[in-house]
Length: 337
Image (cartoon, rainbow, N blue to C red; front, side, top):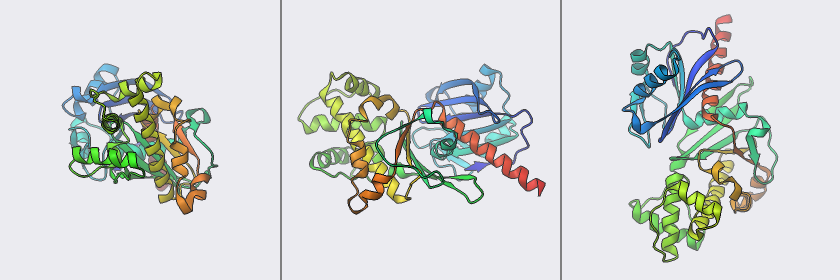
């Protein structure tokens, strides 16, 4: 997380944004009620940089840019921000000065997703399979979209929560059966010898799976966008698309189970991003949960950990707002002491 010095928010409102590799979503949030309004989505490709998109939001929504907190799809640990799956790059302090902001917080998108977990109600999360969560235990969050994001959330002794950002989407993808080894070889040839989890578990990853599975069956198919593959799989009109989605969920289960073991996330594993919620009707019947639990000597641990799909809208913006609010409360307590 990168932040600048900031002054108290007088009217209780802040501007928040969730910046992905494809779209930049902006909104105004009330930090007391967490109600969002004046939401607008800008295609990242339409703007030269983040500053231009923020100015467009200010002008089109007539919202002052004073206190701003953004979640962004890349590491956010220094003043220099460089997006992983888009060309935008900027200086946190430079942007703050250029726009005359009173405060500016930049948080990794899956650190923000992790923070959003404390804002979810029961209707905004769908449980997949068994397990029972322990509320104060570590939690993991992952999501497939333009890329594959990963984060964790831990509860501190004082009751505050702290997000742990990471780049787990770029770990090696490990095939575990004959078909997956064939998929791996196909993708290793395409991506110069290394296949990361993101090459399989993302929107572009679903497109890769479609091509790789077609090759496995000696079929020639045209390149399709992830949205089209998903629609064909849901309708049942394309056997290769159906198999690609089934493979996606199987691999997602293995990956999510690895995250669960890494930090003993007895608080649950939560799945967000743009891909999975759209394919949710196929998830329950997939191998997701069985692969999640397929952890050899530690299958009992995996079986005890629940999984949820986040169905809430704008979770990233709510998460970064929650982080901003917690920071403001911490500063106020420090001043009072």
